[in-house]
Amino acid sequence: MKLMPTVRSLTMLLLRPFLFIAAGLFLAACANVVSPAGGPRDETPPVVVRSNPPNFSPNFVGGEIRIFFDEFVELKEINQKLLISPPLEKQPEVKLRGRSLIIELDEELRRNTTYNFFFGDAIVDITEGNAIPNFQFVVSTGPFVDSLSIAGRVNEAFSLKPAEGVYVMLYDEVYDSIPYFERPVYLAKTDKEGRYVISNMREGKFKIFALEDLNSNFLYDLPNERIAFLDSLITPEYVEPPAEIEDPDHDPDHGHEHGAPETLPGGTPPETAPEMPGLLEGYDAEKDSIGELDTFPGTTQYQLRLFQEADTVQRIMSTSLLRSGLMQMVFRVPFDSLGIRDLSESLPANWYIPEISVNRDTLLLWLLPPAADTLHLEVSDRALVLDTLRLSTRPREVRGRGAAAETIETVGLRMNASRGTKLPYFEPLTITASNPLQAFDTTAISLMTADSVALEVAFDFADAVQRRVKLLTPLEQGEDYLVEILPGAFTDIFGLTNDTLKATFSATQFEDYGFIILNLDLEKRSADDEEVEIPGQFILQLLDKDGKMLREKFISGGGVFEFSNLLPGNYGLRLIHDLNENGKWDTGHYLRKVQPEPVYLYDGVLQIRQNWESEMNWNVNL
Image (cartoon, rainbow, N blue to C red; front, side, top):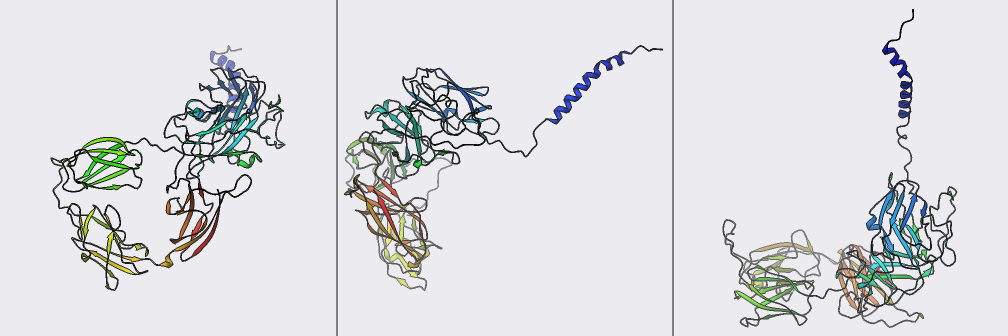
């Protein structure tokens, strides 16, 4: 007897095919979840497969540029890294759509002008972050693409360190004030080695100017922006593009992955080349920067020295009463010939002792007693009145719980020698007081050797403020000493005296130090290779391993110079051409066409050993 199928059996019959399909899909999914771990990492940057218009296209009318890649990409710091030469009035909108990058230009472009969109390493793939190194896209609004270039380096004028991230800008107008008011027609940005390249330029003579652009407007309009310039105009040159290396794995239909496309006579690239990204000539992929300047053999290299103009706008930044009898004035820039006049005409001729900071931007006024309750002063610099001041000389009284208990004040003393230290045998023992001194009593100061032999001592003031006193008695090399200063040995201008002070110390000896004999040869030659007379004087400086100046000599030219009593270690040398003979390095001034004074660094390290004499030669081509 046939049984009628139940509802449940009918349902299973109908679902059976779908269950087999679902099981198959599940197994397939399980078999293809991810690739096996430990496979090779993708290190290939994205590749341009095509673009509209093609790269290096002539007769570009503006509007939109679209670049297609072989994979999805993303943009890293595009606003900071995208550099457009010549600069546009409006920053274009750069966005991504699928595997393409779109540049929307919202302004009319200049006629017959080659535009270079330099992306640096801003374009990366989304999987591993591999960047297209120094990617650039070039179009021209004229019938051909310009093909001339310049290259060079920007260094800081004083330290000679490479100046990174500085704009090098070219102008086709040559009046002096153009960097203040006009944007450049060409520009580039220096790499970490201070190198720059500006390519795809037209023929002509250009004014070159470098700018540390702090407000990103391509104008020299801030006093603290550093600049560099050349006195003469420059001329771009044609640079033969580096020959491409044949790659056996390279697919010509997939696009050029390395190098710039060839350029036809007149600067126009071939029709097949524009689809590919161009690289700056001289790009070194391993260093991820522009190659050495000798990548352009036989071409002119334009070296620029970056400096900040001296700020001469003077004013008083602050005045304060540090404590009773001591007033401080802080100035905006170092002062030259400071003048302070008593407007009340009631103070004695010598009513204060001035103490000037090393940088000449801070003045301490030690007020001689009896000080007036209020000072009415006129302050000037370089014969220009800066301000008139009314200042109280009485400290504010502190009331309430936080008021300090009254204490007996003494004059503080410190020495340049202490327990466990060695005082250089060629330096005097020096005592520095917290206030200017009025007098000292040598009978209250004793100096003894380790075997308790008392020595005769003689002291004298070591500075104009009379805060430092130095021992005139020479120290014996390698000897141990005990110095004792009794109460009342020193009296300051306020009538305060010192407490007891004792110290033991040792003197070094000649064998603890090294010695340098420097044979310095200075030479300057003309274009005809004739020796030229050298104006000005020179400042020869000995530097420590961190570049800090330790000693300096003022010299008139080359010769033999000695640096003695040097502790073992590494040293350097710096030579400043002091053209105006004022005893210091001077920066430049753009409108006056004054370059910063030349600086030269010894290319090497001076290794000083204990009890060792080192002789060295340094030839400086000025």
